[in-house]
Image (cartoon, rainbow, N blue to C red; front, top):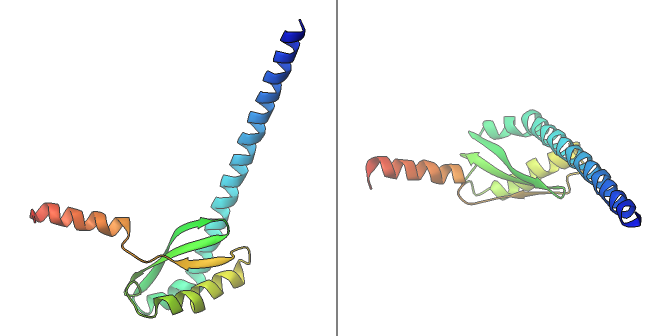
Length: 127
């Protein structure tokens, strides 16, 4: 009898913990989605027009732990001023409008998308 009561209590507690965890996860996902939308809005309004005038763009690679990781694309991708652009234009603008973003990091290197395109080209040309 006592064992069944304890087991019922533990099972009920586990069920409640599961529901709480599920609710927290949904809230975190919603918060992250909202934050990504806010970042995209700031980039669209204040950053992308400047980059577009140089035939470039910016894409979000990741946003975790209040750190935004971005990649410059187009002509901005290999520009010698990419780091300066990131620090003075992008990071300053994003932090000004969204103070919860603590850092903006430029991710350099070749994107997975570009590697896939190169592989497809090589495969199609049998090189």
